[in-house]
Length: 398
Ligand SMILES: N[C@@H](CCC(=O)N[C@@H](CS)C(=O)NCC(=O)O)C(=O)O
Image 1 (cartoon, rainbow, N blue to C red):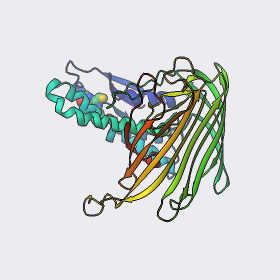
Image 2: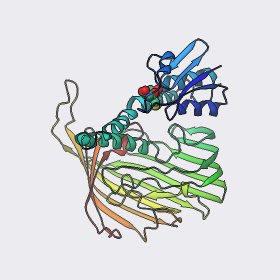
Image 3: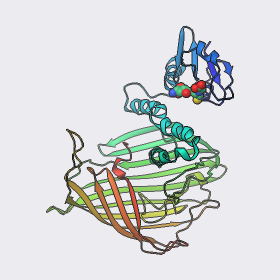
Image 4: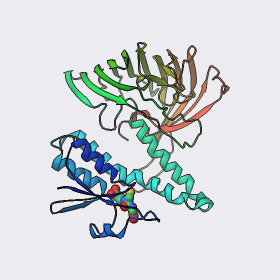
């Protein structure tokens, strides 16, 4: 029988969780942390590192969370919890599997240890906090518009490619949200973390029609998705959403004109976890991040993307920062209505126009946005805001 060598309050909780989800029988051998939080020496008899999680199964002894999860899913998962090896999704799954211990855990552990140094650790905090913000921002961007890291939902879906650029998606799922509250320690205190959005249990059905991008940067291009979702649970609701991104080349070295739009409309029963939110990066620069939202939203962001020369700074023997940057005067307008009780984002009380300029450098990777709300933001006064972020084009692959 598979045995989990479980240390209290430790990462082996993940292994127990996985085994429970899969319904795999197992037994637990418990170890108690000592007063100094270290594992008792008995764990070294199982694996030389003396850490938890460790599992033993027949002749196998396996340490390291990712390796254990991989072993259990391959051996006992019967195809569940893992995309088919060789598929694109499998590579993404594998990346996330390694990501938690390989990248994300380091700044979190550094934070834990360095915090114990009190004032002596202060010089290290800027870097540690920056890295934590980097990782949380990455996760946050990856989760934008979806509920899970690897999929959009737990349920079944069907995708049909009707024509090279047209795709139809139909899906149904069961969703239970108790809380998706996050606590953030942002660099700027204005960042709006997720509120407690628990909305109970729902059966959902979803249909989406997507017109895919041609993917050619120097020609005109358009991508758009329209989705209709219906839910039955604590309430009943319908939710219609639309998103588009199009650009037209202006010719003569004048760059591109680009327009991005989003729109959402939902009936009165919309649960809080499915509410729309706008403001800040990606939707309405210069306005507060997720400042407005509810059951009805619309945004339009237009910019004129002008290529300008930039000094190419060497980045080692094979790369440089590129000899071109994009300067983009921009105009945006957003509107939100149908506020939902207890959410920090509410009605915009009419349209919220903004204007500014963006600068994209490092082959379009880094985007600076300097923008100004054209209408006063309540309680804040209208002021110029600078945002530095990874350009939205890169969000899906970073
Ligand atoms: N990267 C390893 C980390 C294992 C690890 O450090 N476990 C901690 C508990 S979360 C531990 O055993 N600490 C006790 C000690 O180091 O004595 C994994 O994910 O399995």
